Length: 150
Image (cartoon, rainbow, N blue to C red):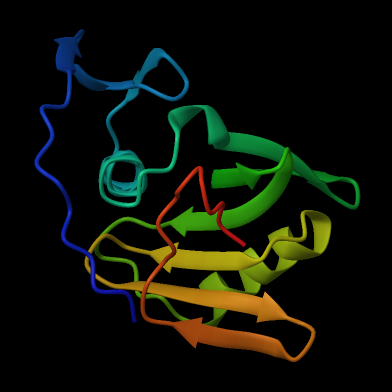
């Protein structure tokens, strides 16, 4: 399990017509503030502020094709112009069960990456993929331009 301390961040939130919206820095637009969106935005800030992943290397709700189906990955992080990490976010009251893991593994079939992360904001689990299979990791690498992440 990942040990995450989310950074303090002054999110831009507004109310309009009885709905709340949060400004997504990556997509550069206002999005409806749902419980899952709250987790996604906090995890993005963790990646950008704590792990120093450049905003320009993160994609949010990226559409991928699974056979004939179109699905949206919550977060994809790129390295060397290739997908490198997929993060699947669930709202806090959703348990990180086998179906959640199967979902991200299906995404990985369409978009192969080195790291898979599932999170509900309270619990976050990360796996590194290699030719030997999945290995749970207790921390995500820090982005460093000089010694680029592998």
